[in-house]
Amino acid sequence: MKKIILLMLCVGLLGGGVFAQDAFRLVSSAKKTLKLTELIELEKSRTPGRKDGQNLTFTEKDIRLVVKTGPEDDMLSYRIQGLRNPNLIVPAGATLRILFVNSDEDMKHDVRFGGAAGEFALAPDAAGTVGTNQLEHKSDDGAMAAEEIVVEAAKDGAYKYFCSVRGHAKGGMWGNLLVGNAPAAPETNVKKPDSSMPEMKMPDGSSMPGMKMPDKKPDEKMPEMPGMSHSMTMPAVTDLNAPMTRESSGTAWVPDSTPMFARMKMFNDGSMLMLHGNLFLRYTDVGTSRDLSVAGRGDNARFDAPSMLMAMYSKPLTKRSQLGLRVMLSLDPLIERGFGYPLLYQSGESYRGAPIHDRQHPHDFFSELSASYSFRVSEKQSFFFYAGYPGEPALGPPTFMHRLSAMNNPDAPISHHWQDSTHITWGVLTAGYNFGKFKFEASAFKGREPDENRWNFDAPRLDSFSARFSWNPTKEWAFQVSHGYLKNPEPSEPGIRIMRRTTASAVFNRSFDENKNLAASFVWGQNYANGNRSNAFLFEGDYDFNKNSVFGRFERVQKDAHELVLPAPHPEGNFWVGAYSLGYLRELYRTKDWNVGLGAQLTLYQNPASVASFYGGTNHRGWQVFLRFRPGKMR
Image (cartoon, rainbow, N blue to C red; front, top):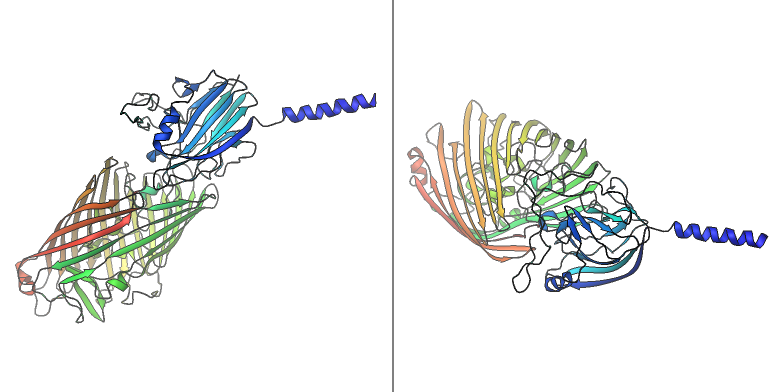
């Protein structure tokens, strides 16, 4: 009798082990590499499911599926038979033969099957699930990493399939899997109606069936899984509640629709590293009879290479908080040297003790070294702290080199010191609160411009203040107004103890399709010091189409004799000067890694007759040719 009882206990324990096993069993797995033509052929052998809205229902016991990552504008998603994250409904005991393909340009992905009840954590627990390994992104030659797995459904019930890479499932990369007599499908993880997958074309030009989402009424609402984030985009480095495409220089905003030219790498802990910048190899010439040298250096023409390189890093600290780091460097001190490049009517800063005139000064080698902390209060609100040494305070529009409307123009604006010249400030502390579409922020910073030594670290000081209100009403517009109180801003003008600067700007961007984009900016700035008030107006735009770009900038600025460094005797008061530029660029080499373009620009400079004797007339021409290098567009 004891032996019988012992045998029954053993059977019971073993039976309990069987019933406690995971809901899915991984039978086999094989990695492979696919080209697009091979993927098209493999799609033909899949088991077609019956489509009913977001439900994809199968009656077969042996099911073949192709699971692919989402398109470039919706990378945190899956596509199965043309549907985005569909509900998969399969019979009890089904065998799933799944080919998972990572077609993403930049990131690793996998697909896991199992529990994950409720809201996904930032780093989802893959214990008790089965699935693929994390596959590398698409290679430069278009080859896609793939893995074919065979999975058996061991238990009836409602489950999920998801990506286990940190942040991806929480960002929207998941769907429902219902096995056997499962309950009705929960709310579906879908996106706005226009996020459809383009039809895949066969080699003969015909369309592949089932590779396009069914039409939906424009006003039809798609429910979202409770607790999931409404945003499917990567967060900004300085503020995790703002989309990365909105982030610009310092803590300034550009439109959410702005394309990004950068290279990005994601890490398994949710950290992100991004690199971007530009370099112009060029020859520039300015036509005027005025001597444009400073302290005996420089003339009216020059070979040079304005440049900027930036690295951005973010790391999640908790589910609601993030650390951000940014470094911006410029090779100007090495290439431009202290006297800069010729640019008529440009003013500001000094070289060998002499004020620079009609030239753009070089930027410091370290143009930004900053850290930020942001905390998400709710889905639509957050606060952040930003510290830079050097950095950029909350004053003015996004700096010219970070505005898409100016990124193909090698020249700095002549209105720079009325609008965004504080982008390199040796000592900045900023606090801000983001309400979703609008933001308030305030800064304490050093008002004095950088000294002549472009390689060193100037002494930090917090003697000046500013505040800025930003508003992005739609994805295509970004507005800001700001005001600053700057102490001793100009080393070359010790008589100016206090300067008050007020700015306002409207930045626009519209992407018509993958190869057409229009960017435009309007900026106004005003300086007020020692009873003198002067204004600056700028409008610039850039239209990219296919491999071509047409760009331009139109400026009117009030400058006095001291700003223009006119020798005595000279007339008093402010003088309106203008610079009107038009350029064209043709991309010679364009990949996801690099863009190389050949460009040219013509500029008309105008000054009033009252100062014509100093410049040899009222109208002057300028021209330049250049090669522009920058990273490719992020998809």
